[in-house]
Length: 188
Picture (cartoon, rainbow, N blue to C red):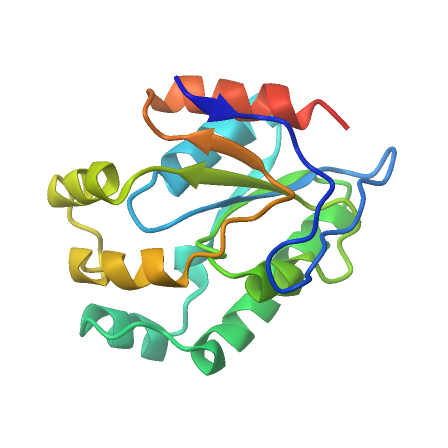
């Protein structure tokens, strides 16, 4: 398995920087990447390992967003803004209760990750990375409830790979990916 599991202290493209981890604070993690990279499967496995609540961002899209994607139209920033704010509030609520949380969310752009990180000191990001060919082949094998495989190209075009994340390449089984992410998250 090829992986880069050293979190780096660098800015995302566009200048967004995630807050530094806060000692003793409950862990908040975003598992991000394009559709079909395994966010939900790896996120659930990672949450089990960390004893954290798992949240799937797909469950929080308003009906208008779902219909837009179902029709094969990519969301724009106006569509995403209230969704990202709601996801941030869900994570902050968990952390306020002392409950670690793992969120599976595409979070393709630096500004989306910055919106998720607002008032969440120490938010960590796990980027599930893979080639277009690998992920496209995976999407051909599954049926998402509203995200058509035709939107994959637009997701790769929108992706701003984070520089300050744990990057795990998705060419391994889910459990191995979750293990690699959990080990990397143990490092400051």
